[in-house]
Image 1 (spheres, rainbow, N blue to C red):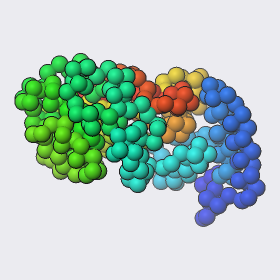
Image 2 (cartoon, rainbow, N blue to C red; image 1 turned 180 degrees about the vertical axis):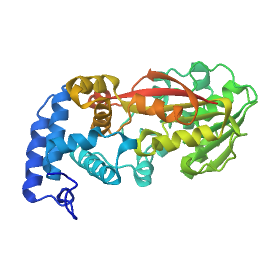
Image 3 (cartoon, one colour; image 1 turned 30 degrees about the vertical axis):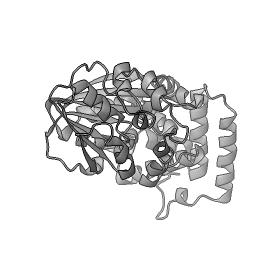
Amino acid sequence: MSILDGPAPCWRTPSAGGRALASLRWKAMNDVPPGDAPARAHGFLEAAAARLMCPVDEVCRVVGTPFDQRTSADAGAFQSIATVADELLRRRRYTQAIVDGFYVSARKGQSGEGTFVSGLEALSAHGYQPDAVASLPVSVARRFLGLGNVWREVESLDAIRLLDVGCGAGADMGVAHHLAGGSARIVGLDSRPDLLGFAANAGPSSLLVVGDVMALPFAKRSFDVVVANGLPPLQRPSTMAMSARQLCSVTVAGGRVAASVLVAAPTLLDELLVEFADHGRDFGRNLATLATGKPTVEDVESAFIAVGAEVRLRLGANPYLDAADRAETAMLEVVATPR
């Protein structure tokens, strides 16, 4: 039996029995220690098959089909499997409302939902230069929710044109202002006007714009440096590739795109590739993404290479506060050079 059989596939409307069996499978999976990724992955595949009322082999076939080889039916089936993963893992789907809600406490100078290390602690953990941090207004520094360090190995930004996409309260704009000695032309873009009010204090001469990475209101190749530190659409597998394309499109050839991206932990992927060696690398990568809700390092690198950029990657400090999240994810610092 295939999950694609029939005019109204059964996996869309599972019976009470199917849901009950999925719950039992999931309970058994949750009894597995968090460090045993292969056992938990087997538990997820069994729970998904029960929830969608199809054989485990069919779930594995869909998961292992490369993105560019999926039929429209396969794409729909994979989305159903991803929905099951979100439900079983109690993971909220990415929406603008979720993103806005995440930053409510940050507007008050508190950690965003207590999920990540933030503020001065985060700036220190990610290795920001102490003198650059000291130059930031307190109201800006304590609202920092970047996931990494987009200024690593950068000592000067003399007379450049810079864009900070998802600038938030403006910490990275303030650091850029400090590194440039006031000579840079800095633009900050964010979808939350209230945070831009704080960003205005980070660099008095900066231009602030309300906008979205999916529709950047700038001419192509109009910035020397573009940064995106913790930009939500860049963290999600479904919007990552388009975000990478947009960031590179407004950066001059030979310029610098610096971003931080939360990814599935490379160690997690390695364990899955060993456990499911017969299923191939695409299966392991897609399973790691389903398990974490994050792209893999390979996915991120491929997204920037696909738009003609040279890419350098570095694993940085994981900002998650929860130990289970830190075990399954990693923080990736990306520097891309458009050609």
